[in-house]
Image 1 (cartoon, helix red, strand yellow):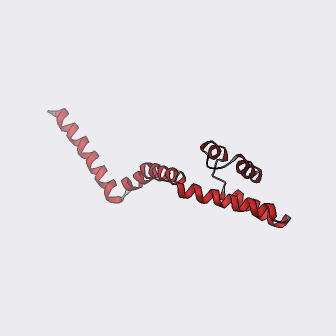
Image 2 (tube, one colour):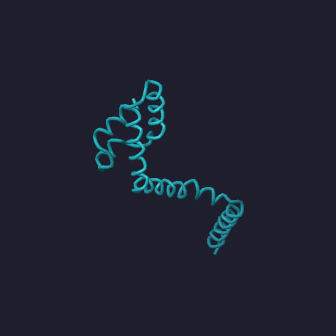
Image 3 (spheres, helix red, strand yellow):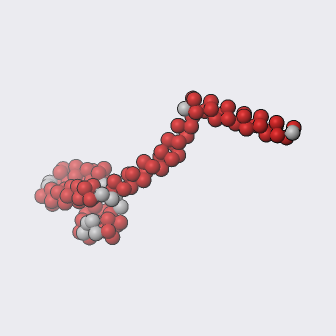
Length: 114
């Protein structure tokens, strides 16, 4: 009977601690830092695979490549900077494998990032 009371007190203590954490918002913060972060990362990965995102990026790099071919030295520097910023998180090799871009465009992006 004594062990039962000890277990009951311990469980009651945990319940009080969890209740206080819930009331102060710590559970929500913990959820956001773990599950919420993973959920946002998954949504971002899905978004980056959507046709509209891929097509928009593909059209943007084609336009930049054309402007780069026609541009003067100053324009080329600006376009290179733009490509580095806009395509920093894109793995051009993966995009080539998936067929999103051609080898020519992959090489252009790679050259701009160097």
